[in-house]
Amino acid sequence: MPALVLLGAQWGDEGKGKATDLLGGSVDYVVRYQGGNNAGHTVVVGDQKYALHLLPSGILSPGCTPVIGNGVVVDPSVLLSELSGLNERGVDTSKLLISGNAHIITPYNVTVDKVTERFLGKRKIGTTGRGIGPTYADKINRVGIRVQDLYDESILTQKVEAALDVKNQILTKLYNRRAIAVDQVVEELLTYAQKLAPYVADTVLVLNQALEDDKVVLFEGGQGTLLDIDHGTYPFVTSSNPTAGGACTGAGVGPTKISRVIGILKAYTTRVGAGPFPTELFDADGEALRRIGGERGVTTGRDRRCGWFDAVIARYATRVNGLTDFFLTKLDVLTGWEQIPVCVAYEIDGRRVEELPYSQTDFHHAKPVYENLPGWSEDITGAKSFSDLPKNAQNYVKALEEMSGAPISAIGVGPGRDETIEINSFL
Image (cartoon, rainbow, N blue to C red; front, side, top):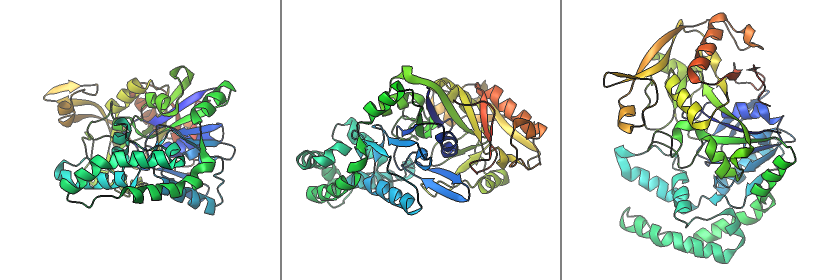
């Protein structure tokens, strides 16, 4: 049975939660393999809307085992709060598994994130201030705290001491902040140990055994391709690898196990935070996309920057991830435009460029080259098949498919779980 990777093909917020939830009833495991509670998914089930920040979307699918992999950074207080909220709404969360190798976001990681971002001023990255970057930095610097450390107080204390040796110097001497007490951090972290214990597991072993037993495993990226630390619009990126390769390292599954890689594309483009965005709109069209699309960050609460579809980015995502399929979301938001511009290339210093420039400088100076496609005015939220779509909507989808380099196998025509057109099965 297949192992599938499902990830964002733009800057995130493409609707991965809807896509994951659509597949959730057909898969046995849904795995978050990177990121932390700086990402968010909105899933609509019937008349119920769920905002998930750290938990895999599969938590809403009965019979599916949700897994937080070793590549994720976990804020225990956020996780426990999210579990409690779902339990209060009658959602069974007992099957959740958390890798013992996942790293913990500590209180001092959050503090460092916030003061550093303020210190940068106009050069700030636009982080969520939730400690994600500093936690990944601790991981790479080998002073990080892992979930398994919560169950050995001696090791936990030693690791917190090692981390704070340097951080307290920075906080007090550079940022003029009060030093953080080791025992206070240790005491807080230990309060989470017993609450998390029922969920902690060797998830690498569990997932590989599941694949050997012909179970279907879906790997879910937290952010989009253009936010990848290696392949995104650096430095305006996240601190991990949401691209397809990150699924292997972030979950402990070899690349030969992956059978399909599905990219989620919004029918237009959005971005949260700072950084280059060639098709960004600052006019009435941009405001209309934001309003009609409900473009407000699930986790951050920030308004998303909005722009027209960028085929250059889509082609790049296809290449970097080895995409086999696209899931196109929010097509319904474009209803009502007489003409819909699509970015087919960039102009950089008078040159036409059809592939994403590797140079940060060139990308900052890229101007979109648009091709206008005819729009439609008919309501498409009730469409059940591709043929139900207006002809111009069909042509728009076909044009995006041709420009992007992989088949569009599903289309979201509304926010509801059942408002999806499935063209080709992902399984």
